[in-house]
Length: 103
Image 1 (cartoon, one colour):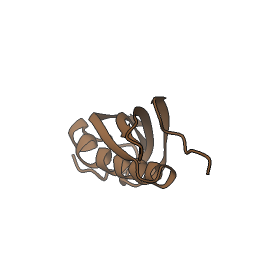
Image 2: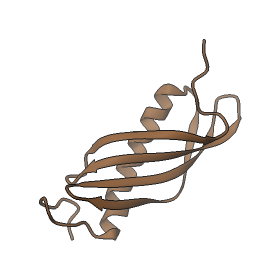
Image 3: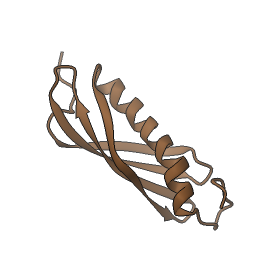
Image 4: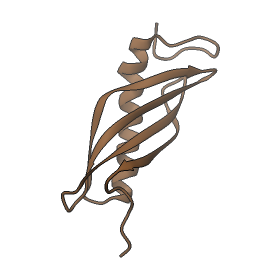
C-alpha cells in the first residue's frame, strides 16, 4: 500500500515504519536540538505507529547525551497526517538530563 492514502484508507505496517518513523524522528531531533544545544539523540529500535482515523500516531524512545556527556532517555510522540507530514510532536524526559539549563 502507498505511503500516501486517502482518508479512510489504512497504512500498511511496513510503510508506516519506513516512511513516517524517520520523518517523526527528524522532527523530534530538530525540536530537541533547538532546546538542548550540543546534545545528541540516538533512537532506540523502530518507532511504534498506530492508525487513528485520518492521523497516524508514532511513539518511540531515544537515548540522549548532553553537551557535558551526561546520558539519559526520552520518550517521543508524533501525530502525523496521512500524507506523511508531522502535525505535532513532543518528547518527555524519562531518565537523566533533558531539560534546558538556565543561563
